[in-house]
Picture 1 (tube, rainbow, N blue to C red):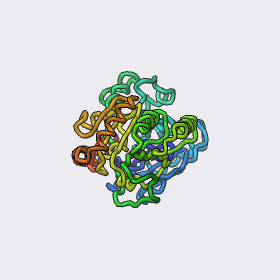
Picture 2 (picture 1 turned 90 degrees about the vertical axis):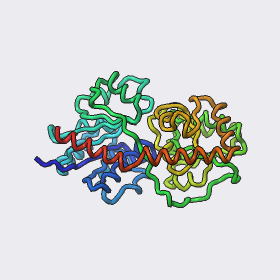
Picture 3 (picture 1 turned 180 degrees about the vertical axis):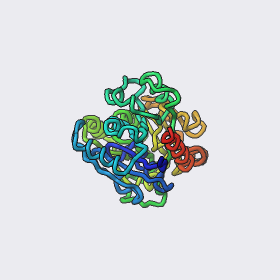
Picture 4 (picture 1 turned 90 degrees about the horizontal axis):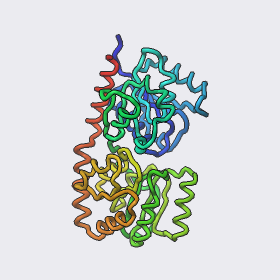
Length: 358
């Protein structure tokens, strides 16, 4: 029997989101490791397209709606033609993946990125797909337990898989950052409710001597409109919405502090990117953030929604260069040691190999 790995990662879009970046990073890393790797984007193109390695076989499916049978047929034929034996589906793309799986020809891995899934019931698409899923990677330990207790997976089917940062540290700024040149604070998170920009903005009102750079996709919805309206109503000229950017490493290199004000998280890639780029961090105590920061050993943790604590922690760091350097050095060393791409990719490959032998 042919046991050569032929892996397809499946993601809904190439927008600059956390799950999307993980999918692209994993596909690139597997291809670099010599694994035949395919990446299926089910719906929309995006800025991450330019970061996909030439070694990755890309399929842009262009699915128009949930039950787009043309897309189903095209993906099913592609899987058979290329003899895919591992489908690694990210987030909700597991629903489509479960529908098109050839019988007895491949294994289905679900990569759960949902930071707030533990407070909700399993979605319809997950209840439908569960019996076809062979293994689950979750981005935090709470999600692992949720998958076992609420969805019904066996403990042996589920594991916590660490994210890892993967930035081009040599890239240059596409355009100069706005602001006055004072203390610069980076907030890398798309304009989504779970990222809780309002806690950040309330903190920014108390720190007029700092410039805040919000990097992430603007989806033009009610939430993003409310964020913009709050900035305008409170004359927050020190807050700069930079939108989705492909020069994240260069932006972080220009900043003094990294911050996350999230209401909910899994394991945010942006937090690891702060560490990789040598930034001290203030972060809410959600998801795996506390674990990543050593429960305060490698950065400052505050409770979710507490804008005063967030502002005070940022004020302490902004006024103490020695403390910033101490936290930055410790966190960078921790990220490089515990969240290395090489170790994580090797572990994933070994898990794939186990699944195709079953």
